[in-house]
Image (cartoon, rainbow, N blue to C red; front, top):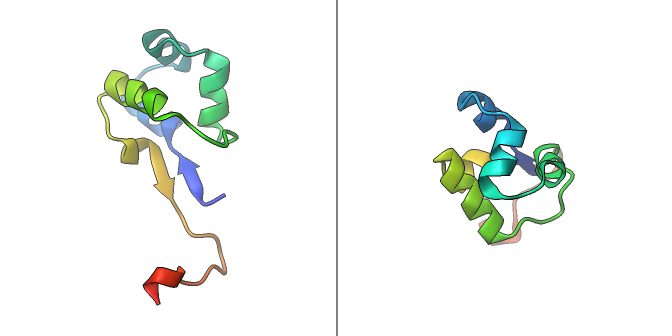
Length: 78
């Protein structure tokens, strides 16, 4: 999947553990772990907002788009 989750990087920069974030945003550590490992298929904006608020960061600090190898331009870029 071309969406990369950098939650572990942001947590490391803040010297924070996943359990601390889970407690701070009232989300289970298990659900945050699914997000952190990139196995989540979706995230609610309210969850993303709570995470960003607690970590004092922007959504782009956590989520990143990388084109997969061999992918061409998107149709609107032609």
